[in-house]
Length: 76
Image: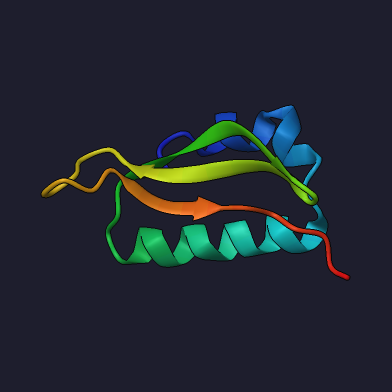
């Protein structure tokens, strides 16, 4: 993630559950190891587990720009 520090410094990131934070870090490692160049972007949508965010490809091939949309939820 090219904006990792800014993304993790955001108040919305700090409000995510520890499980979601752990998953985001693991996903970032996988995507980085696969060679993706992307940034995290916060959206205004809200889910029970926090704000929605996307991983957006910075150097896109073809027409896709939104790589992943994450909608955090609270466990039941």
